[in-house]
Length: 504
Ligand SMILES: Cc1cc2nc3c(=O)[nH]c(=O)nc-3n(C[C@H](O)[C@H](O)[C@H](O)COP(=O)(O)OP(=O)(O)OC[C@H]3O[C@@H](n4cnc5c(N)ncnc54)[C@H](O)[C@@H]3O)c2cc1C
Image (cartoon, rainbow, N blue to C red; front, side, top):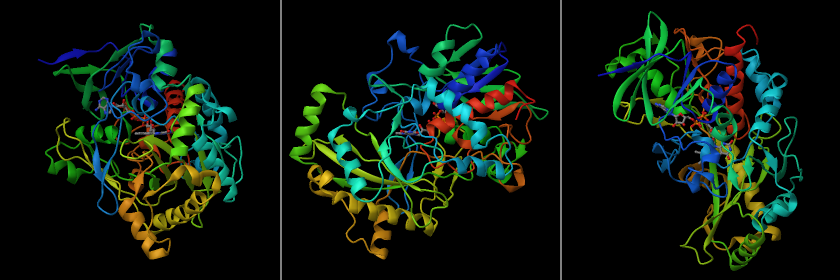
């Protein structure tokens, strides 16, 4: 039997990075909101029920993963981690909080999306930075390996800045701004949902995977979901999909919104033939130099940990390849990780991530079954320019690792290009690359569905009334940043557009 509930004005699907922001802002405005999340809800931070590994900002947890898998340019198997828990990826990510470069937001407006310019978004960035309690590490908080990297980056020609995320900034290196409070990953559930958890307007429906949107006469009126294995229909005047770059297009496709031929092949009835759902998928590919670590590294990390919190990642360099269409296009973001297989017990990683990939892939459903993950094809490095940009970054990283400030920590190379010359290096990059964990773009915002748009500049899905998208899937092109903060801002901005329909 299907249970039907109709006590909400708005259903927010996914209580992740953007979803928690969306739900909180609508509740604060007095709307009755049901937020439907596939993963568990561990309650407020104060309740003390959160698993330690999700709280500990010092390392990336491997629990609560949705289990998406795919491949890189050389056919290598890659995991595409996404968190299935209240707070979404903000509850398991690396905590770097960057806005990027102003020109990327201004380009969004130039492509037909008014209201998304850098100047218009600045107040939302400032608000999210405050809510997420973003701060910068002081010099004495920087652990020895990270300090060594910053010294080496300066020696390799990139200036130090203690404000590495200036929206007007150029190349530079410095400590990452982070949403870490006393070693705790301050996720969007803590920052946004906790203050409204006691409001009667908010209902959190956890461990409920949304199958599809209920649509009649071109209007969304709820969602079909399963709670504790039981089918349930929830109804509301507005449905906002915040299920992330993979989850949101999956739900749209299962709802009959997507490329008609693909839907027909899977036996899904078509509501709207919207070819771009699942297209424009892009991620920031990354090439990693890896080293076995040294006794000196082990000793200095141990000594540091006696008096200070020891995070794995802290420093960032922004550099520009000849392919850059702005002041920089590459991030280098080194980390150390415990590795029992190495003699010193640590592995050192010096990755180079391309922020502005040109390659575009696609997400496709394998079946109409919500229990089956979609096929995710990022088409990494399909464009030669992406390989060339990464090669530039790898050559710079090779200079960095030779500097005395860092060399004494690195030890034997575990993953290292055999030869820095063009053909060999390109081949090595293709066959060994990983990614920066930043997929986006599958429900692209734009002014014309015939030209690849899925939602308009207010997040409204073309062809269906009462249905919006607000998460990392709306980016036309990732800003040259880490995307958590820009995604929280997407949540803020679209919530405001819902609440103030005449604004923007
Ligand atoms: C390992 C890792 C490290 C990262 N590090 C950083 C970093 O340091 N800095 C940074 O800026 N970015 C980082 N990112 C990326 C960043 O966290 C994400 O880009 C961003 O959080 C995405 O936000 P979102 O709201 O689009 O999706 P999410 O935060 O993923 O939220 C989607 C939510 O929807 C839920 N959901 C999905 N499908 C359904 C369904 N069918 N029914 C109900 N609920 C559903 C999910 O469980 C999830 O809670 C990292 C990502 C990973 C995986």
